[in-house]
Image 1 (cartoon, one colour):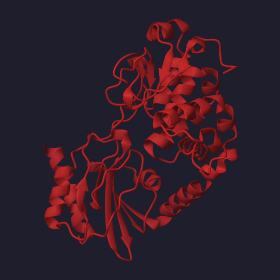
Image 2: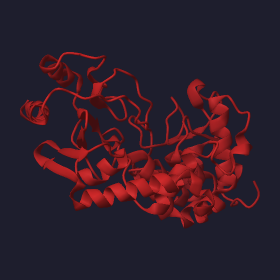
Image 3: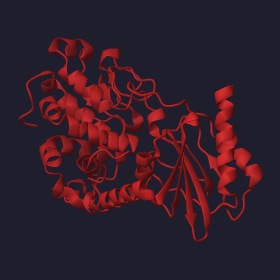
Image 4: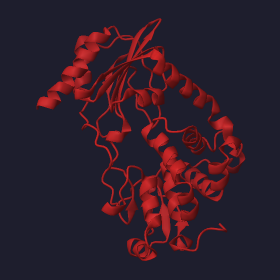
Length: 342
């Protein structure tokens, strides 16, 4: 790829680890392979202390600003740079390592985009646009969909998308409007919901002693809307509808990553709370109270159809519950109060 800077990046090549790992010596960024140098904010990462930051992109940018000698000592004989999953923070991290001059010049945008994707909160419209462009680059509505046609293997598709983004980073970062079909409609929805929520369309009850926000709305709301307006790391959404009341709780992903500027409240295993709620309301009509384990990146507790959920997706079928909101909120506050006193 011509035009890349003549620094340590000149000897590095892009790879992808994926589910099967990477047998060659490598630097892993954002994700975390079992061994070798690592620049990541994931739990258990091996990032040197002086480079740590809230986002892997921020960590990689600190590496990019380090002296050539320090970079060489850290990398050893490594010439391959990999991630083990595909997302915006991964793209920003790879860009900072492989095209540092370009990344450093666009630091604020890359960090806003990575935070949009990893933390699920509104940053800036450009940050939102870049995150959605990365996520949907190979979708049928993408103007560059043809570049990935026929790629069936998920690891190969991730590698191809990263390679395309690294090659065309300037066009994507400096001219996101060319990819508007990938973000414009959802962006308008989130901006509208946040504005209406600030004007009272969402009732926001904050319980700071528990780090909990109870968000009540008429009808569904985007996860980013809830996170942005919650003012808490623990979010319970009470959705009122014509057919009843739905409940979905989630721990925001900030409490899963290793952060350096903030310290969310520790997670609690939500499954005992789900069992407690199930005593109040046994399963009916194919729905029940369910909860994810705390080690999941975004654990949820919900009343609805039991199912798994892919990281970063909000797809579970939530169904009307017979419990009044006061009883559900009381169960949550009691549960978190017990943890505070234990």
